[in-house]
Length: 544
Image 1: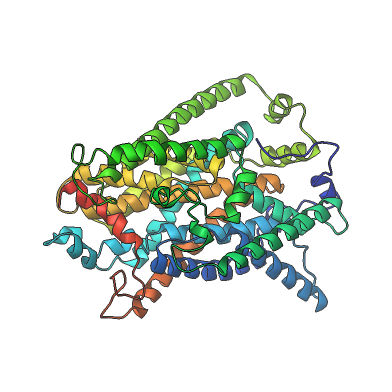
Image 2: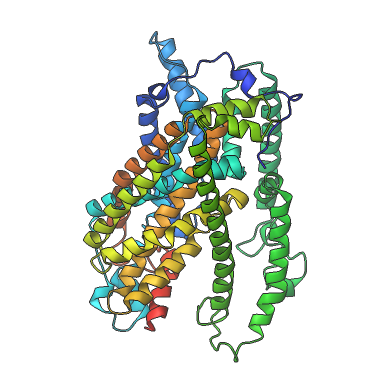
């Protein structure tokens, strides 16, 4: 359930009652667009560089939010001191700015610059196959075309999210922990001075910040490498440590556990105990009967059972939720034909105990919503464009491959991935990408299948990541009285920035890698370790 406060508790929105609500162009401003370009470039470059070196990259929601707020608030103050009139910096404009930056960074991570794009080169192909076919190698993807491909693929993810907004945020009332935390942070920043809620929130924020940073510094003194320290404390003994039963004493997980519902916390706990304590040891005992390889990361071995068992459970629940969603939408469409109101009274009547804050949020959210038909039409239009552009960039994949994905399995994946993200704050899009890669590689099953599978993987990763992040941002918008139209405008602007600057960043890193150790090789400055896992599946499917 959504975290709300009762009528007797201090209200967040009453503190903003005296502030006028600007129109669309009062929130989508040139100053916020300019600042968005600067921070989108900085955080995208940092994200891609970390991904190329480490193979993992963390979220930048919090630091980007703080920097964006401080920069634009400081800019407004500076202009006023110089005698230049400047409109107030509102929390709604803050949401637009934050959405633009994070969307660009999210696209940068999902665009394959450290994974499937690098995996298409001959360096990795020769390490996996003695004589790779030329159809399974692309040395240089044209970045101009690829930037266009990024834009249309990300737009598919944005359009796919629009028909689900009301059901996910209002009916299911999923928490979206990151989106909710960002909303509380923005509300705290913009609460008028002297407001009681701001004092409570800032005080709690400072206590949590000081406690978290103090604990991190304390852990640092006792860290002796990747497998030594409080991050990998063998609480249950060394035998269970080998099966990944240990404490990491992470303050982040404590915070996440405080935010998500208890049913999710206990579900993760019991799932980890059952899988790591019962299922995985049982599967390992079947080596020599069910499988023969000793490589724990190979899909021909125990990892194949782990991946596909988990994948089956996730996809099955996604299909169930998707069918439920379709049923709700059809019933809602039928009922709307029998009614003449705007739909707002229905939501309010369904929740008669809503407090002042939720009434205001519903008023803005429903009064400025984007019609579901707009998302459907946009999904079809951008899906057709992607079906044309992908074969233009990667000739190994055909238009009917892309069209089939958009028509059949992608709608299920979009909903189930967003639903899981709303519950746990984790996106399972990499898991769905494996399914898509497997399907396309097995469908083609001839030279060129590797490139086609990797291209389809990119199609899934970009669109799924953008879709679930877009819903996170809409949750932030809902809790800050930001119009959904403004939030979606931030998504589109962020995608536009990403399609221009991210290919340029990739070319920069590629040009600055040593010629003797090019991008993606083992001895390179940018080894891109994640790309090896990405390209493994199509080779296994083809038996190469």
